[in-house]
Amino acid sequence: MSELTDLYQEVILDHHRHPRNFKALPDADRQALGHNPLCGDQLIVFVKLAGDVIVDVAFQGQGCAISRASASMMTAAVKGLPRAQADALFEKFHQLVTGQKELGHPEIELGKLAAFGGVCEFPVRVKCASLPWHTLRAALESTAKPISTE
Ligand code: ZN
Image (cartoon, rainbow, N blue to C red; front, side, top):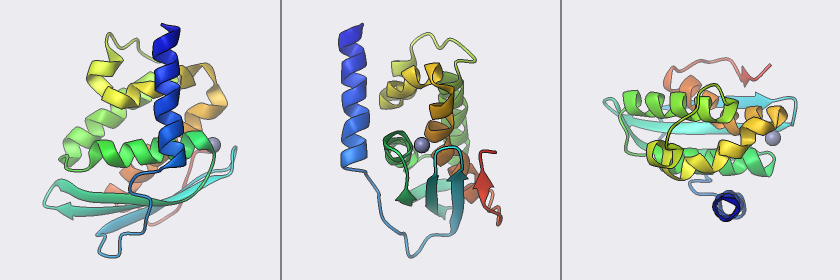
């Protein structure tokens, strides 16, 4: 099991060092600002929609390794998905990082996002990992006000 944990940490480190979709999206339809005051993470999530499908998504901002890696992996995971599927993925991810529910096979339900399973043991980090997802949801709902985890 520790080997698997190392692999997961490697995935998180890789996305931290080389974040995917780390850019502004000039033709975005929606965007939202997220802020986690506990850690100082701040990011903007950009979304381009075609009907109900997230055809492009990107982020900018600064934060800790967990928030940055989570934002990077979130954009990679939801690009191309219909909103309903992105929402469902967020629900599962949230359950994983908060440890609310034991997912039978998180790696099957969540793919690489299962790497964040260890986060539930560190309550402060849960907000770092979930901030990009909360911000994505806010962008999809076009909430004008900044999102805060507090
Ligand atoms: Zn953080």
